[in-house]
Image (cartoon, rainbow, N blue to C red):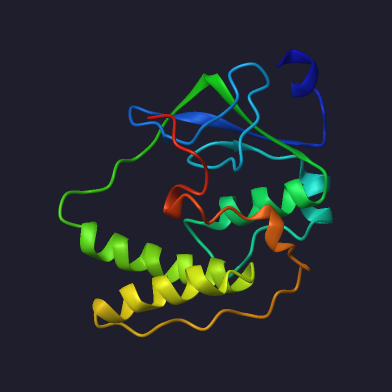
Length: 160
């Protein structure tokens, strides 16, 4: 990883601790489908070149940024030896968090042209009795082939 860590064309995520995300990363190359969480190393010039974070997203902004980074030819990796201790969700916020995440997931699906995923998520939002959000227009030219909806809200194969 030392050689690639010097690259300015690479997004790198630290490992969230004490509860790390179960997304798969290659044990030899550290490549992963998306980098995010509490600590993310970003090459500013490259992030600005691809448009920065999507303002319509919050918790899923790093997923969107990672997919757009891969689309632009940047590497997306994890650094297993870098640990980030972040705030854990407070007890009792699960319903709000789930609905907020569903709403963001719907926006993300619409932005990436994943109609089936968007409809499935919209049905779940309606089941909660909430309004389905309207996604902004795609201003980045997202290529749906870089998005991974086959693993639900994990957005990547899980390690466990």
